[in-house]
Image 1: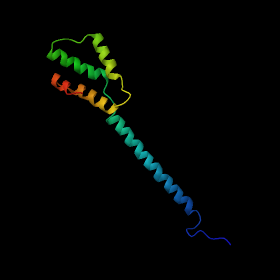
Image 2 (image 1 turned 180 degrees about the horizontal axis):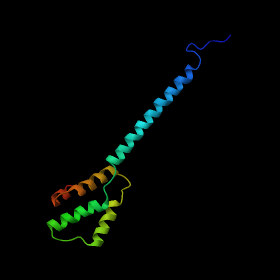
Image 3 (image 1 turned 45 degrees about the vertical axis):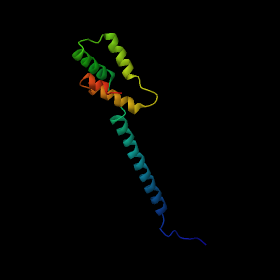
Image 4 (image 1 turned 180 degrees about the vertical axis):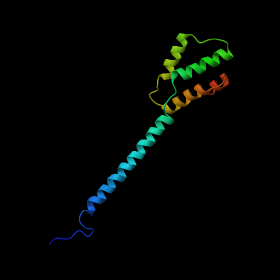
Length: 109
């Protein structure tokens, strides 16, 4: 005694393929979201940009030019990613890169 498939032959396979496509689309959207998050919020500015701006502010407001050694140390420190707290670190670097004065730099913590 065999039962006939009420949905007809091949309908189960179509449902499985549809489910796989939906799951694939969900993973695709999640992948894009992670990429946007990383590139938009968790990607730090270059150390050169950060330290170049700090050097510019230092020279403008104090009249002291940053030496090559100090600039190299600044760049190395700016590019050293922390083990934890990456979002805060990136926020601080972006703040330092975008600062217009020493008062702006003081708010970057």
